[in-house]
Amino acid sequence: MSIDISHITKRFPSAGSGKEPFVALDDVSLTIPSGRLTALLGPSGGGKSTLLRIIAGLENADSGAVTIEGTDATHLPAQKRNVGFVFQHYAAFKHMSVAKNVAFGLEIRKRPKAEVKQKVDDLLNLVHLTQFADRLPSQLSGGQRQRMALARALAIEPNVLLLDEPFGALDAKVRKELREWLRRLHDEVHVTTIFVTHDQEEALEVADEIVVINEGRVEQVGTPDQLYDAPANDFVMRFLGPTTEINGVLHRPHDIEVFTHPGIAGSIPARVVRELRVGFEVRLTVELLDAAHEEITVTVTRAHHRSLGLRPDLDVWLAPTHGAVVPVMESVTA
Ligand SMILES: Nc1ncnc2c1ncn2[C@@H]1O[C@H](COP(=O)(O)OP(=O)(O)OP(=O)(O)O)[C@@H](O)[C@H]1O
Image (tube, rainbow, N blue to C red; front, side, top):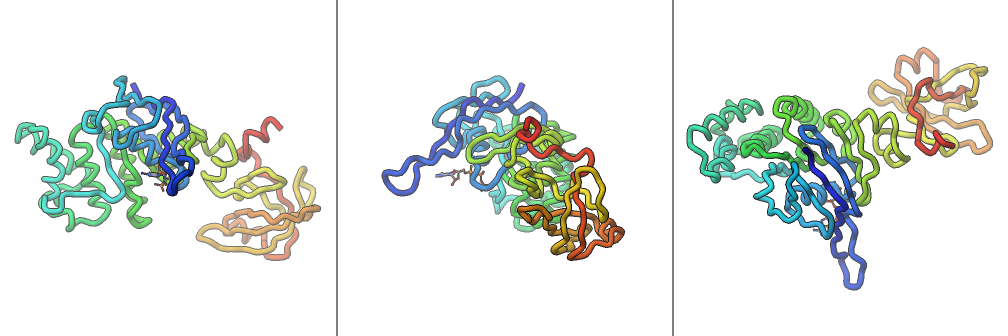
């Protein structure tokens, strides 16, 4: 069982008369496995949220089909799809306590009182908000509010949990804590979860599977390791981490070995131009001493930098680290 997206196309009218409609999703086909945590990753405007909203039933596709756990959901209204949804800015009921907010979906389904209470207690425990049960949402921090939102979405026991940049509005530290927490939560509840993010680190850290979406098309689907180690094209390679280009081929700046002596087979002579220290690493701008004199970026740890005695104007020799990622598929066959 899974979520099957088949040939989904979605256009939006363009502003101004006579203009062609804007294609937000262009014939997207995709299978999202059950019980896994799948990230929709890509740059802003690529179509991630539109795809999520079509899965949720909050938006209709112009063509194509959505099947959720074997049921054709293409024309089912959102409330009949049994999906839980959490947005970046979660709209809680401001006048209701945290417990009441979590209970809401169960109460409108007229579940017995004892069952509702038990379920709310369990969920608040799961999201570590038991001691905040009687507070109002305005008395919670941003991170706590998003955890409440997740508890509320999980209360109805959804077939699918859809999260649209759920931690996007939080500061970097809380965001990091919550993504670790989401991973652990998912390991406990195993509900099929799709979350939208434009943050590659978030996707690599949390997801079982990543779907890279750009300009309304799927660029690649795979596990974090598959995407990182074998990017299907330059776009995916660039989007998943820093890159630098040598003679038209992409490399990771930390996958380039620096030598302070010549003689290494295949190494390229170069000269250090500038250095930038950021945290544990030193980013070197290095000029290749070939005809083109391109400047590339090479990253080394501070300790490595010190042990090699690197400094601006020093002559060095560069070679791809043994076992480094093959930059792009095209270069494998070249
Ligand atoms: N209701 C709408 N009317 C017109 N255009 C829309 C509408 N909703 C989305 N779009 C356009 O469709 C494209 C895809 O939007 P979408 O929100 O799916 O992208 P996204 O990948 O989720 O980006 P972000 O990370 O910025 O949310 C964008 O160019 C957006 O402007």
